[in-house]
Image 1 (cartoon, rainbow, N blue to C red):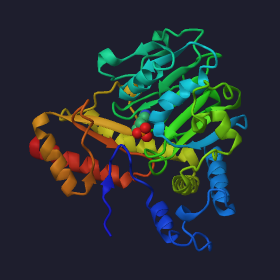
Image 2: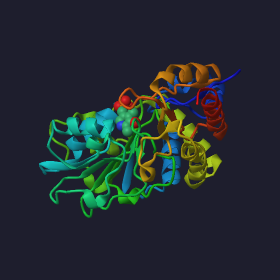
Image 3: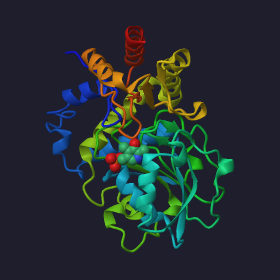
Image 4: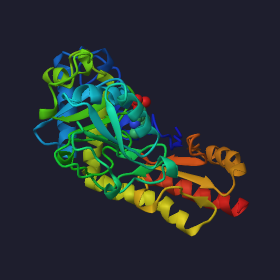
Length: 360
Ligand SMILES: *Cc1c(COP(=O)(O)O)cnc(C)c1O
């Protein structure tokens, strides 16, 4: 069976061995004579799957003991509201850094709950860079500082961790969590929807420091109260059981690859194939400032928009799929998450060279 190279921004490519294992275990998980989808979330089989997934994620990311790992639902978009509901802790405002479409959505949702101070923004520059910390105007009384550490649409990534002193740093890591080692202890809270770099849509991972929980706004829905979910091992209600199972298989796959330091090496090599090529050609162009270019989501434009349709049609015919850029940026976008093999990026660059030769 031929599989395509899938450059979708999300839901996105998954490691083939994970899909194969899930298929093999579909009707009978480990002699249980049940599919994981059919198991009680409170039964011993699923509790073991859940515990293993959490342990593997903790090991991969080096999550300190004073942080809870929550497996929730609602996507990163739900967290845009759930974060202020839980983290305001009696304060009236929060700082947000606006680096793209996803920060902007997080900001407009947070405005329903608190005063939002946009401490820095690259909106007027078309979201092509991450503002340096020296440009930030932080509010010392802010409840937290929120960044979108990888902007999936614009392809802008923080390659540094901001220093927010005693104010907790909150990061939407949806599209680059697990792409490289991250120092979790520098953050108060990390959240990520699973469907970019972890597993299927429907699962949302939250990593939260103990002391930030327990002061949710009274209106907070119980299933979105971090403390309630932490006290109930994310089972205050039925969690996304199958998503947790697949995420767990992905964590084991990552450990087998050599962990996140190894993934970073591979991801840097993959991204360099495209970024180095942009340096050699005027036919393709990255809109993003060099220092802030994402290793995961790589938008690029062609010399003329009139060539976009032909590029998509011809690349698609060669099994290079879902390369169309977001409408707000135009052109193309190659999302090259952990599960995209380097062969996929090599095939893309080879196609791009050939397309340039014919149309350049
Ligand atoms: C995809 C994405 C979201 C939204 O995720 P949903 O699961 O659709 O809510 C939020 N932030 C970032 C950075 C994303 O890439």
